Length: 260
Image (spheres, helix red, strand yellow):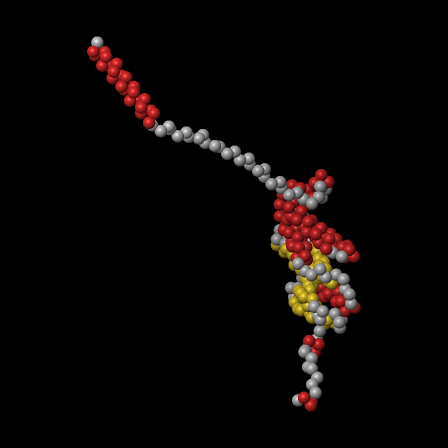
């Protein structure tokens, strides 16, 4: 009986000790369940299509642009630059810009045939031509004409392109300015005639240019550039001819001999 009473007392004491420990022990911190953030993936950007409706594509170059994303983007960039330039041209001159665009398209399709890489490069060149015109003064009209050389003789030869760039005054206000426009067209024809163009391996674009470098009330500086000629001309709108050395020499003020 005494042994049983001792065991009961010991069990009671142990229970009391364990109860006290449980009361004194700090509660275990609750661990938050990991939050899994679900980020929705953005859809890939839609490829830029060409500037025309592919459902109506008929020409081989149009079908290539519909099938080749890089060529489609190049076509769209060129079309956007052309439309922006068209808005800046005087209404009376827009037909000349259209003529330049048509000559380029004919050149590109003839020179590049069914080569999408060649076409993409040619479209980028045309876009550069159009966008470079934006940087010039609103008084300057930039016209570009493209042609192709004779047919290649070998299977690896590609027609070399001819690019002729002409700056003119968009709205000539004086007889001297109107004469300058005529002369610049003549200078471009002269530079073009001196330009040898022949088929070359890999193709390319050679060309001549007559560009206005600066405009002031006193003179307009024109640059004529070609493979065999390069010169600057200082044109006088007042005189209607190039300035000569005697025209550009500073005039000495008249002095009174009595003051000497």
